[in-house]
Amino acid sequence: MLAYLFLAFAVAVHMRFLPLPYSFAPVTAALLYFGARRPRKEMWIPVAALAAAGMYLSRSVYGYGFSADLLVTWAWYAGMVLLGGLLAKNSSALRVGAASLVASVSFFVVSNFAVWAVWNMYPKNLGGLMACYVAAVPFFRNAVVSDLFFAAAFFGIGYLVSHRREAGITVAR
Image (tube, rainbow, N blue to C red):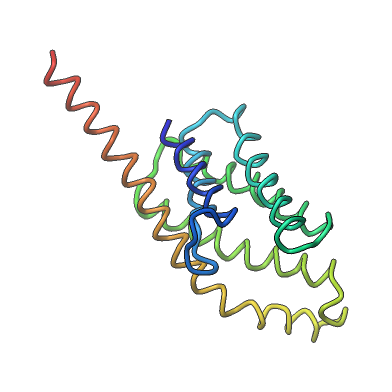
């Protein structure tokens, strides 16, 4: 149940219903947590929910149509749910932190490469690619901080809830 609650929170923030500072969002943490706590057959749910939210934002808020960089982002969503699946049996703080950092760096690299490749904002050469990455650096810090913060919060809340539930069952016997 918590995985769906965290996903709903992430979608609400992603769609700007719950405003947070720019590039400070629970999307990555929700994907990792969902992958760690829900069966693989449900993996499509967060990917579809966030893809729909992204399409809505692209069309209604930003005035962009469908573009190939959205496919890259959606594939990245699926990859993060799968990465979260690696945390299912052992979600220690170190493993959650490492997965969160891998997620932050991979999104930075993959999404900015897709922007450079798809859009005409930068020249299609190495200098243009580097300019694209440099332009994204100011957003990267908030992304890393929010990914670590929300991953710690989501997995921490999940840990507390599950242990409280176990303690309640033990006391009731």
